[in-house]
Image (cartoon, rainbow, N blue to C red; front, top):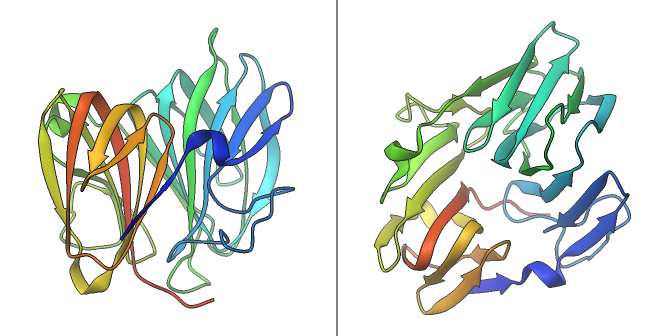
Length: 236
């Protein structure tokens, strides 16, 4: 089963400096049917104006993955970490027992990013932060694990959750498959371009909630970049 969630039907909040679309209930956007998808609690599509950003604020017991689509984001936290993550790359903050952080767009252009929150398998772990460069060539025509809670994904940034954040880039008419073990769920968002997922079209910014399937086939109808999260099913 594949449920396409068009970009223009997502939750929307424009704060001037921040223009955000919400795939799931967040802040003032509430939809009882879209509280989470498996362990995915938040998937925000944010556009952050130059010279602005999120001031220092706390998080606790959440795995927070940031995928930069355009521009860059500069992170600073209460652990003393500071770093700049550029387009195509990813950072992971495991909030654990608690962390304060800030994120600012110090660039001359708008930064566009996906921020994904995944519920950890357990609480009480030590907070941490990391970022990694993933050359786009490594994702050409195949899925690459960007962040993962599985030991076999040795090159991925670690997560404290049974989940994978996968990235792939496809040329027009190129296809690839993804297999879901153990009845896991998937949520796929098109970062660029347009794709067909088992006969259903998803355009840039659209989300696709995937369930009750072992395998999907994704075909690009134009050059495309996609992010897919595989997550265990969880109950409300």
